[in-house]
Amino acid sequence: MADDRDVKTSVLAETSNYVAWISEEPDGETTYHLELGMVTLHFFKEEWDEMLDLMRSVI
Image (tube, rainbow, N blue to C red; front, side, top):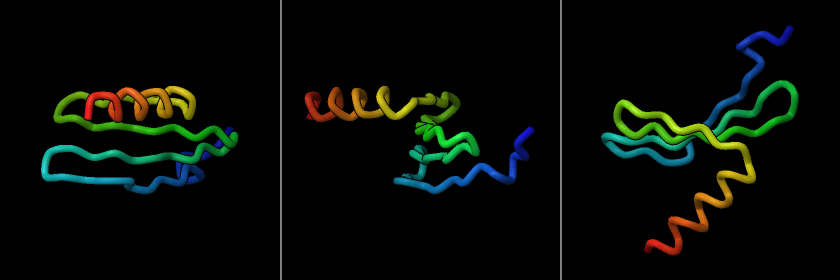
């Protein structure tokens, strides 16, 4: 079983209230995370790409 220390994380962007970060799982899966106050959303790569497309449409 993989150890939690095997998960590599890095911050993509951060404000005083929000943070977007990425984790590289030991199995090779990339997961994106959005922490929005008390809510955290987790996305796989395909979902993250779709979310970015949605946000670009909003802007």
